[in-house]
Image 1 (cartoon, rainbow, N blue to C red):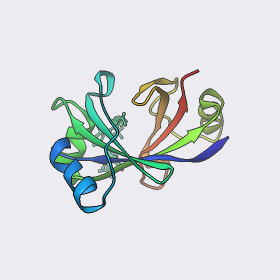
Image 2 (cartoon, rainbow, N blue to C red):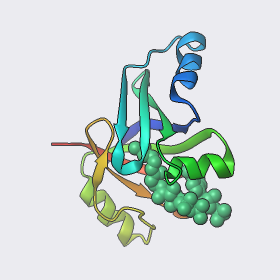
Image 3 (tube, rainbow, N blue to C red):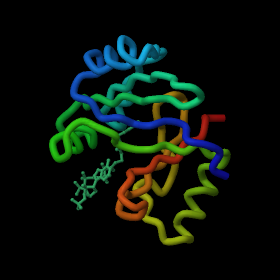
Length: 134
Ligand code: CMX
């Protein structure tokens, strides 16, 4: 079952420069930075209420985030929904003929298993499903 929005992923060119806006202007606080090798990104997590802002900086030109910024510029990259059963969610999406980028869970930031859903199946919004690792 989808529980809530877990985080908003925002593609940025420079993590440290972008954190300044969230901390100095919005008055929020970056609580964690983490590199996710598999996704070729550096991430920074900034809580806002019970939702996280996840800033994403590419660590390679081959990163999906580098490609996104090249095409669209910095900005909102994906929405991530928290689920209590990622595998069941993936199966349910596939039954409904929704195009999964990840057909099996993979490692994400924040000690989560994640799976991405293609934006062409989700009214244009790259969507992540995530479940805390057990
Ligand atoms: N949001 C909305 N649409 C997007 C998008 C995004 N973030 N990224 C790409 N698209 C659109 C493109 O604009 C394109 O649309 P058009 O054909 O109308 O131009 C279409 O999707 C296909 O894009 P593409 O450029 O041909 O394909 P890419 O090689 O860039 O791949 C995608 C796009 C979504 C399949 C790829 O980025 C992907 O697999 N993403 C999932 C993994 C990821 O994003 N990881 C980084 C975050 C990791 C983390 O949060 O930990």
